[in-house]
Length: 292
Image 1 (cartoon, rainbow, N blue to C red):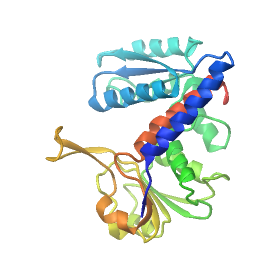
Image 2: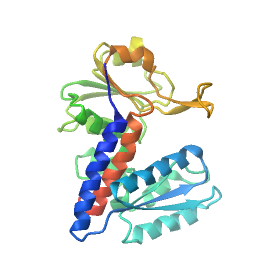
Image 3: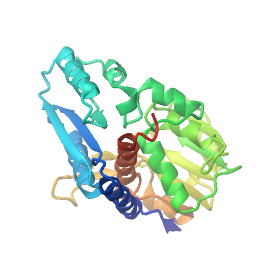
Image 4: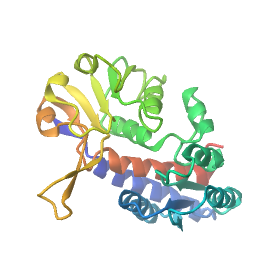
């Protein structure tokens, strides 16, 4: 069993991005600028945005944080997005999700200029990704592909089972793994909460991507020997072993599953760091005007 070290790969990619930014600046170009909109004070969102800002510093990007209280109106948020869309000094920006219930998330996502949508959530980017046109890839699926690439894990002709059909992970990842590319050319099965044969599908899989949001869902008897397992889950569960009283837990029963695997990602330190670094790669592309 080999552990897929997402944290180490992410640091390597950030250094590669920093080198590209240094070349841009040496040519007289400005460094890419990433802005983030954060609504409220959710602990998880605060941490995610803080980590993104730290990553910007390592990559040599300029970063800006725009904060709103949970009471912000949808109209106020749309006004802020419009300002960022029109700001030529901002190359890309994100609106940290989830948003308060009184705000229509899809409306917010669609309001973002797709040329600055470095999260890759806008329908234009999603559609272009589906048909193989240049686009900003959704960050988590792009991070998973980068891990497969860096660890030279074969995907062509392999059976990939994705557990979960979300717009953020499951659906875009399925499309990417079916591309005529590497990583790609895979036979992809997507299972979800209504699937009646999840265990049977997983047992036939060469690669399993678990993105269901249910801690320790994937058990050892669901994985064939030699499979690769990618754990996207990040759920805070009560723990007496940590000062916070919580422990970040994945969708895979790691201790039981790991001995059967050829490769497996840990939680934390697997897919999570790659999601942030994929956002950095999209920001570099936005700043370089390399996509649109």
